[in-house]
Length: 440
Picture 1 (cartoon, one colour):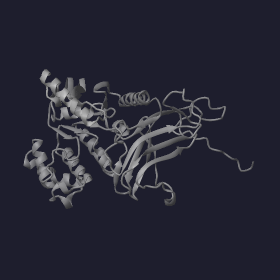
Picture 2: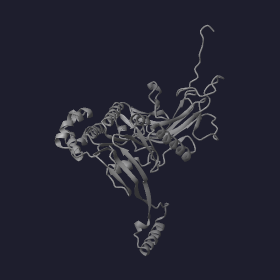
Picture 3: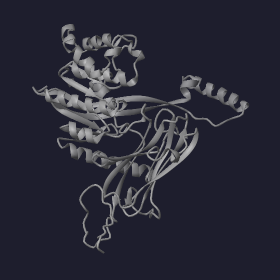
Picture 4: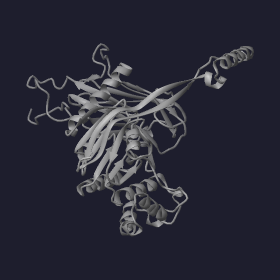
């Protein structure tokens, strides 16, 4: 490995074996008995058990032929859609699992923050876990003591330092885990999309700390769906698509554009329309108060022969959410976040924005919710709309930029009735406002 290269991956691949159980139609008891006897007889002849005969095995390559180099002091973003192989790559780099093919060379101590509480022991106190994690990183007790006060101050858990961390909330767990990983001076810091569990203030604090770590000359690998954070923090970016590298370069903006184009193309080719549907029938995530089955965008009198992901500026955009409320709560709040193609947040809109008497019902059961983005608001360009929900002032149910239901779309045309505007107007928004002169 050359002097300033701290991570080198060559032809990296990770294969998993997925078993599929044969699906059977409902049958009468006599049919089941006869079928079982035939299956057992065939299994004996072929040397297989009846259970093995009823299953098939599929090879799935989570990563395939991934190669790159990362130099000391670089901050590299790793981006891609859900299932692209980002977390698998980080687990290989963190030595949590071994590659099926290829090789990895790493020079220096690695601290990984891949999920809440990675490497923590739930029965130990916060104090004990700080020393445990430091020891795992190869630090002496004296080195850990020198950083102890900084870690506790950053994590804001001083009152609970001698409490077993199994009693910590997810936010407290995350604050302590990040503080340990960032303050114990590893040469390489690997951070997955775990900051979504923290509040906005904590996320800003973590991003600031990662920037400080990078300025100290240490290497940071950062996975996030927040393109604004990727662009602000990273000097390079790797785009993964279906387990392979689709873009690798020094221009972070170009990498983000590649990722957004791929996302839009896949969304349109999968659905053929401006909609997101749960592929499993189980909603966007584990059941937590609410399950979202479908999200869609539409416009009145839209020509279905138009490009699948294009909408016009001169008509309202109707947003529809449907699913099921599992557990009612007066604090339940759901809505959407709208972003530019660069990941800049334009606005949030939620069910509790209006006066309380006009809030939609949160009674348990199936629901369909609709709202409209006004006509003549968005300029021409690419956008992303994302479902969000929370228990107000308590916690996120589906946090922004956490990989939940989202739709990529484009706005074209209808920017103004004025004959003076033949080109696109500057800015993200392009409203047509009425100007009136008082003396007329």
